Image (cartoon, rainbow, N blue to C red; front, side):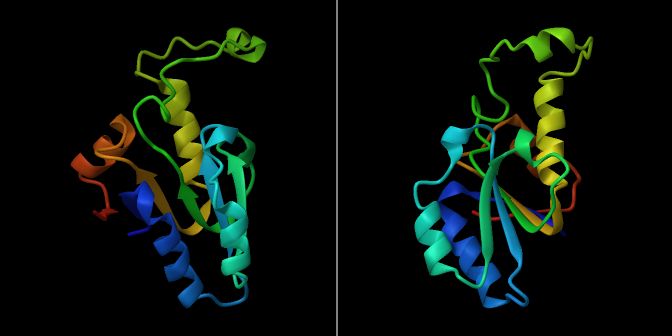
Length: 146
């Protein structure tokens, strides 16, 4: 099982676990839906976990990137998927006829999940967004941490 759903409060514990088994300075990518999801403790974690190569970027910015481990931050209702869609020119030009709810946000979430070479953690508050609930309630090989 390479996908874990976990509380947002466990990010530091996740980093500790990766650091304990670290070999050859593994890369850890912290991904947020937007730049404001960048953790306030990012610089502290970089200093604390020197055996890890920790970076933050947006899910969109991670397209084409890879890391040994990925932690997707704040997969909560209204955050990922974003409830309020900002209108951008590229969005207007590439609007889709998808009938699936939040289809573009779902694709972005998929991009974030597939950046990990080994394991991905999806962090959330409470029950998380519909994406987390779907992963946890389906017949998916997902580890659920409380």
